Image 1 (tube, one colour):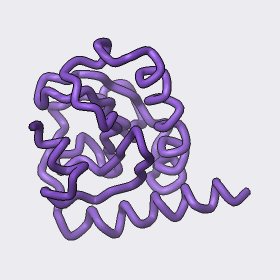
Image 2 (cartoon, one colour; image 1 turned 90 degrees about the horizontal axis):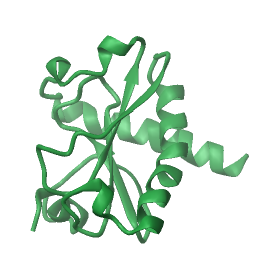
Image 3 (tube, one colour; image 1 turned 180 degrees about the vertical axis):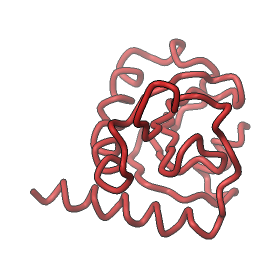
Image 4 (cartoon, helix red, strand yellow; image 1 turned 30 degrees about the vertical axis):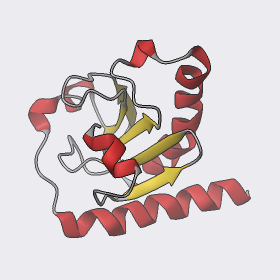
Length: 134
């Protein structure tokens, strides 16, 4: 069982942004930039391109409103998308607020203040809720 599956199951706490029956999104505890989120399928599959086609395609559809909400909360030029997948053997996509291409680097990652993650996730969820009612 991966650490991401433990997060999905509630065995490890996280700053959850969104969840449905197939996907889960939460803030990274070692963000490249404030607002860095991970989007994961609930099915435990090591490599992104080993996912079933419908799950793979749905991952970006699930991530889209989250990325738009992050852009409203975090000052940035856009939300970059990265697939690295080496640190946890569970398929995942990084959503990272960036202002230039150099911002999308794990060299910029640092431990987040755990107390800041919950309030930030709440702000992003509020943007998601506002967008879904419009």
